[in-house]
Amino acid sequence: MKYIDETVVMKRMKSRLKFNKLWKSLFLIATLFALLCLVVLLVRIVSQGSGYLNIDFLTNFASRFPEKAGIKAALIGSLWLMAVVAPVSIILGVGTAIYLEEYAKQNKFNDFIRTNISNLAGVPSIVFGLLGLTIFVRMLGLGKSVLAAGFTMSLLILPVIIVAAQEAIRAVPNEQREASYGMGATKWQTITRVVLPAAIPGILTGSILALSRAIGETAPLVVIGIPVILQFLPEGLLSEFTALPMQIYDWAKRPQEEFLYVSSAGIIVLMILLVVMNSIAIFIRNKFQKRY
Amino acid sequence: MASQGLGKEQSVQDLIAKSRNKQGKKVLEKVMPLLLLFTAVVSVLTTFGILFTLVFETFEFFQRVSITDYLFGTEWFPFSGNNPTFGVLPLILGTLKVTVIAIIVAVPLGIAAAIYLSEYASDKARRVIKPILEVLAGVPTIVYGFFALTFVTPILQQLIPSLKIFNALSPGIVVGIMIIPMIASLSEDAMSSVPNSIREAALGLGATKLEVALKVVLPAAISGIISSIVLAISRAIGETMIVSLAGGATPTFNLDVTGSIQTMTAYIVQVSSGDAGYGTTIYYSIYAVGFTLFIFTLIMNLLAHYISKRFREEY
Image: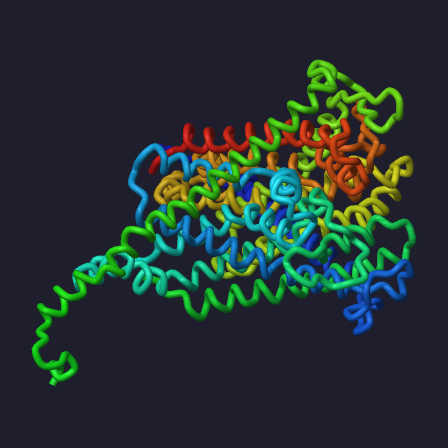
């Protein structure tokens, strides 16, 4: 007596295997579609913008004429912005992470801080712009300055840095802390001389990635009311400035076709900046990060 | 030999006793936790700042415009001189149009990519594809907006001749492309955390890989997948630059996706880039719209959190 009819099994199995193959290729196509989008986007922007990308473009100020338009004020402005965002957000973010990982006891208040951070990460960037406009620009009277925009951006990327720093600190094994305590070190000594040195590659990687988000962020700057066509460079933290994404946005909005190419050239500069920052982050991750 | 460095009368015990008595160190041990607590409180203050800003200025707005007109009005014409109307529904509808299109694009593609990466791809392929998806997620939204306006819209116009330059379709599709990596990566995390023993059991019973993926892994990871979709919806609702560049500035109350629209975020940008004087009704209206947007995204984020907690299968 035959329990299994092989021909029936083969017949059914055949179609099931065929389905498996068919869907596998569909899944692959879906994955490749996302990659294709990236390629098309990059090729398109490079082919449009490279004609306008030259030394003059980097050293000229903005202009009404597309041939003369340059990105100097925006590029320097973005660097000024980063000079505020980097220290403020890293100090606040790493401080918070150390507090939560090393000091915070399990209680309602600390739970609230944790929940609050994860909720803050989901707030749209434009809402941070409204916060910056009210608190920094108007209430504290900082105006549309580097400082006001820098504080706003710092708060925007703060949750990202906190989470990255928390992960890096958590990855330092407890044995190392205990060894340090065993040698008579105090808690603060353990943190500064054992935990932080071990965690710093992870913290830096996360921070640079967060900063590269801040450098491309446009919406909060628009809401704060950062000016676009500036013929001067910022002189201090309280002077007005413009930034790369703002400048790109302004060019992209203009009706003349030439400005679209200028905008593409601006995007190339922004993307190069992002690639450089990301490469540094990846380099630090690969070179210095230890696995325990 | 080692004692030479310690001087004549000092022993290790003395050293320990001495350093224990150092006042500076004691102060540091007490002060640093407080300083760190202060930095942690900044993030809490940020939330309060956002709430304070939005509630306070929105309250001011409702002194001038009745709350029912705002919530149920279907006309949003703040700039029409003598008789401005502030009915938020057209803005919400514009946002929803873009979000729905984005989700239609991103959910099938994102989940398919997640299934491929977690169930089919070799380690090598995964190591190449995942960083590229991360790059896609890191492209600034202004670049996506430019892409929508100058590339996707012209292509769509060839397919649909009646499509306007500013429309809901093009930014919707591009927002969808933008959130694919988010859905793919979070869903892949959820699927990868399904233990292999379950897969092997199904394979041992004669299931094909497809059957394992769809009937075993997908149901087991469903809470993570749904919460990734909800988070992506939240991102799409709050997306600003793509819709500002490619969506237009015409708040309309209909279901047409080929014509110009305006989303909540795009309205805030429109007012901010113009010169709406401080203290005018239009100035306060951006806070009311911002508050509405904030509530939408907050509900989505809390929902995502709830789903991933409540329905998680523990292995």
